[in-house]
Image (cartoon, rainbow, N blue to C red):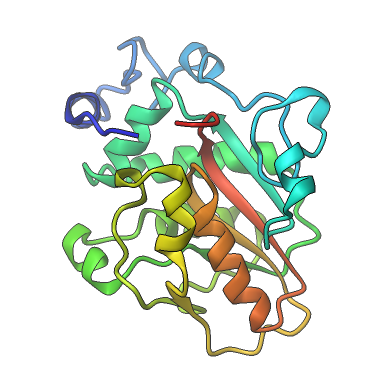
Length: 237
C-alpha cells in the first residue's frame, strides 16, 4: 500500500483554508461548520457487507473462509469505511499531515457504524513504539479513541499496553511476512481478567498487527477483543 503525499497535503491545505469559511474540504460548498458537507459525507466509500470477524468484504456478512480455517486472536472487527479515495487521503492527512480535526470526523463515523457498544468494557488505542511516537508527535489511534470514549461513555486506557519492538512498516512488506514482522511487538503487564476490549486503529490491512495485539491482550486475560477501525482495505491491498 504505497503512500502518495499529494492527496493529504492538498486536503491539509484545504482544512486550514476552509475551516473558518465553513466550506466542505472536498467540494468547497457550504458545510455548516462541518469538515464535510452532507453530500460528500454520504458519498464516502462505506464498508459493504463483510466478515464479522476480520471485516473483509464478502457476501451476506458471513464469516470468511480464512477466519474459519484459522481463526485470528481477535473476536470481531468493525470498519466505518472501505479504504478508497477520499477516505485514504483523509486518513493520510491525519496520520502524516497532523490534521487532528479529522479524528473527530472518523470517530463519529465509527460510532454510527458500531451503534450501542454494551459488550465493551474498555477502549484501547493501538500503541505506537516510542520512537515512532516521538517522530510523529501523536498517535492517531489515541486521537480517535478519545472521541469514541467521550461519545460512548466507555473508559479509554492508552497506557494499558506498550509497543516494545520498533518493527518495519507493514506497508513495506509482502502480506505473508507481516505476521512474522509483528511477532512479540507488544507487551502488557496488567491483569485483564474478564475484560471485553475494543481496540481502535485507523486502517486494517492484513490484520496482522491487530491479531498480534489481540494475542497479547488475551494472554493477559482479556475475555474478548474486537477491532474498531476507520477503514478496511480490500484483499491484497
